Image 1: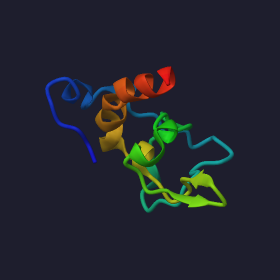
Image 2: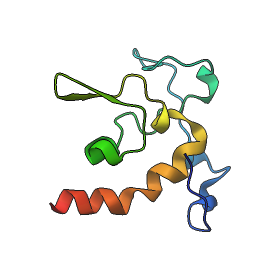
Image 3: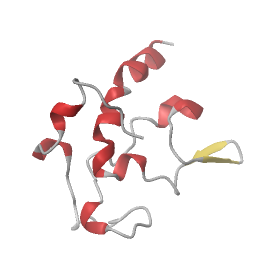
Image 4: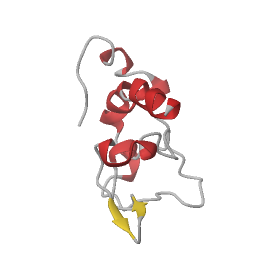
Length: 95
């Protein structure tokens, strides 16, 4: 899931790429086997608006995108993938 290039690898090991908010009343908001590695940084997934091009594990229920089974924005190693999609998100916003 992660993108690898010189632009996205700079974040590895940096504190800004991971935030775990155990005090949140919804923590964890998705089922996980590893709550210590659950990244809350993208609490509201920025990829949602990309619809079928988000790259996550979603389904449509009564015409509404359901991401309850998706952990893409909550995995520590996917920070580069998420930020690598920002240009695509901006283009989608212009439409």
